[in-house]
Image 1 (cartoon, helix red, strand yellow):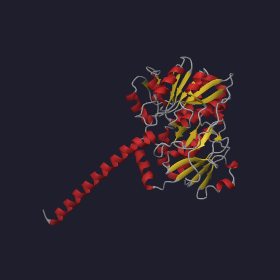
Image 2 (spheres, rainbow, N blue to C red):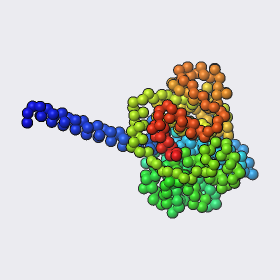
Image 3 (cartoon, rainbow, N blue to C red):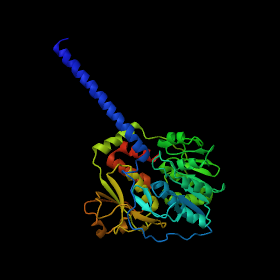
Image 4 (cartoon, one colour):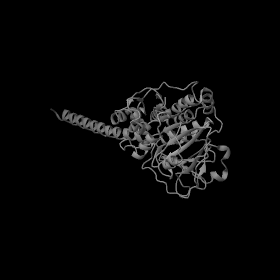
Length: 407
């Protein structure tokens, strides 16, 4: 072999070695990040802990005995944002329900990872008042799927269930419901990207795909995050009738004439993860702030925080001008996760421009301000996704949709 051939052979070996190294590194990144993006894409690092003032008002709302009672269960340490806020808004929008957030402790609930809210009641308070839910809503509270649901929460749900009331499991709330045993032998679904994991962990239920909402008697479940809407609407129709359903559909500018039950269980793929990897490592990541304003629409707020958290920002935090709590449209106590004097904000998103003043804007001197119309003619998830398409391209928008299990 002459010198030229030896040199060519050496170069080819080096190329092959480089290709193998790149392949191994890419595989490691994809495998590692697939776990992150598929399961915990809504988080920007370690779960936050509430560090603000603890002297809260009682926060127990008045109950109207002529209305149905909807209890939405939450975990103080972490509950999925849209899973909780979407049904909270939708059941309130019927005008025919008392809707209460319940948790084990009378402490702030982290709606991962951008906002804190206060529960209306603790489990013990509900028990002492002898309140039985007509409808129990179970959002995702198993923030990391390897961590089993809280035993105290599982036992309390079992105690609340009468056999006649409705249970609506939303997204990975299926893990909590599967742990109760109430769905054993009955159909259940969950987020497409977590389906196989939960099916292996909890073999008791009959796990099904490609449907937004399942029903087995009075036990319901939904696909991933975005399907919280279809699940809530289905129960609203069943409980309050078609007239009330139509009112709520119009309220949220639902993009279909009827409840969309057809659904493709498309999990987060390696290709979409690679698109996210490119965005994460090679594009500028910013600090996003969302301004909390009095009487804010919970549906719009939950949509915004959940969707934009999946754009992989450097951080996403909520703010009030005085760092104090305020009330949402339907009376939730909202506690900001950010503090004006400590946190940098590069982009500020404002849901109610009419109430946004120049004095308030001066609190965010380095931020580009994005104003969203108060009156809109489009389903809010589509509005946010279209904006992501403009900012980051169609491939990345599709990644966000997959993490939301939205199609």
